[in-house]
Amino acid sequence: MAEVAQCLPMKATDVAAIVDWCRDNHPDLVVVGPEAPLCAGLVDALEAIGVVAFGPVSAGARMEGSKRFAKEVMQAAGVPTGRAQVFSDAAAAKAALPSYGLPVVVKADGLAAGKGVVVAESLEQAEEAIDDMLVGNKFGAAGAEVLVEEFLDGEECSILALVDGENVVLLPSSQDHKRVFDGDKGPNTGGMGAYSPAPVVTAGMLPEIKERIVMPVVRELKKRGITYRGVLYAGLMVTPEGGKIALSGSRVNVVEFNARFGDPETEVVLPRLAGNFAATLMHVATGCLRDEDVVVKPESAATVVIASGGYPGSYAKGKPIAGFEDASAVPGAIVFHCGTKSVGGDTLTDGGRVLSVTGMGATLREAVDTAYVAVGKISFDNAFFRKDIAHRAFERS
Image (cartoon, rainbow, N blue to C red; front, side, top):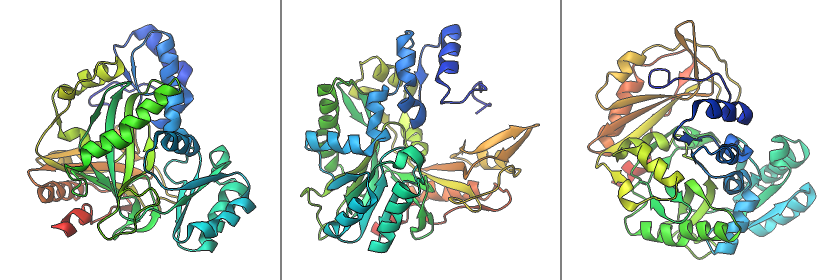
């Protein structure tokens, strides 16, 4: 990051410090990325001092900050999604499980860094998840309420939509890889890789996604006095022909919404955009978004996350990283820092997901190959990564 921008010594959640800096330095536009400062009201505070900010106000960020609120909005707007109930009592939540069948999904209501969702294959596993959240306080206040939810059958994908309060423009489709190991095995993570476009999303689905999912949510929020400006990320489940259709009756259902650019999806979506993206963000923030603001390049993109050994469980930090220059020199490769820090001129690991290495190519196969060539140039102690990014797309061909 320091190569392309000035890094400031403040946390994204330190609303007061950021507001003070903006008051003194008068930025033209502030782009608020992470969910925590959005939910904490950073955009509200910036707007209060006259600073233009990209991102929803805290009331709108509840689409990610509270799964209960998001379900209520979707139900009121008639958006297809899985059936769900909300519980704060463990016994009541467990009593509801048999009516959902198996698998069944248990979700913490609040922000849990992408780890508050359990897809339970047995009643025992579902009950354990409920106890972890409601009795064991695993996620603190974020798990004070849980949702017991219908399992949606199919293939997941992501659609990021730019919203200026009234107008909506969809960005290219993508698909991430949530499970930690190859073959979609192991626990969920914040994402081990992604690719774009996602062939599970056909051109014919896009108008349906815009008109039946994104626009109704924007209108329902408006009814509630919330003008949503920023990114509305729709995590979708697409049920194949012959698959088990959800109780909603739709083949395309919302799994959840995020109020920000998703990671690692952003690392494959934004490199596919042409033009002045900063101007596009300004148009979103000021309520004048146009269809022509988004121009998509024909190339495909794939990104591979390099993680610390032990992730998503416990892992060591402070491991020296080598090979950045060689990886960045691979034609079509981009290296994004996710969990790193600079100490005395050295770059060290500082998180579970350490780097995201993106490859661009005329085809998805070329993009994936480029990403893995670049990944092979990077090393640190106990590093690991998935070796099957985009496998679903290749299985279709």
